[in-house]
Length: 277
Image 1: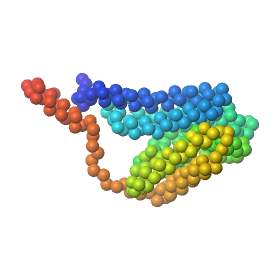
Image 2: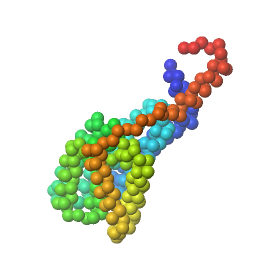
Image 3: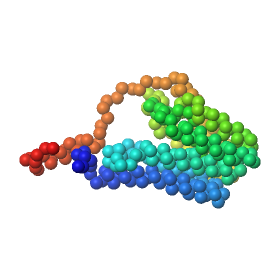
Image 4: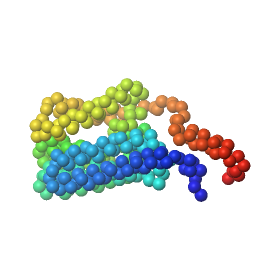
């Protein structure tokens, strides 16, 4: 028998929820196209495609919460889908990039890519990989950003290998890293949270601009990029040792519950003698 609440979910809400799932799944298409571009050594195209996947991942959570996909489209586990695509786009694609792009010393590319895959598999399967206060625990497998900077700055291969190995170790160190789209526990100040969000958007714009002008560079854009990384690290370490308590909140408004209740009452008025189950 059809569950009563699901029965009353409108077709428009179901279409919206399934559309969000489809939008999330499109990240896998961008990942596949990124691998194809890397295979053909079209590295700049690959980075643009990786960026598109990051944009999808950045906004799909907000859309899913707004569309209430867990209620309107419960047959798809949105969290599981998101994790699968994150492993593809944030781990597999950049690891393959290291295999192809000669950023690591000769004979070490397979080793570097393999330790990234193994450490990230551990990180992704931890129950507290994302903590209850909306932080990442351990280095959050931002390998696509790492290979971008290694490629952009053309640092020596042995330096690149050292950076990769250090970050692999940090996967297992329980430092809490800021979740850029979930800043509830970063600070109680709404303006500071908005400031951090603005800084993230500014960093994204600077990164895109650096990719656009490559192989040229720009001192201002590089400075903005480095300052954001430093800010991100400082805030992450600070909140690891100085967490904050959540602010008390009232009950969340359920955007589906009220219309459902109105529909139930309307149904009872139309069929007053219908036996209740």
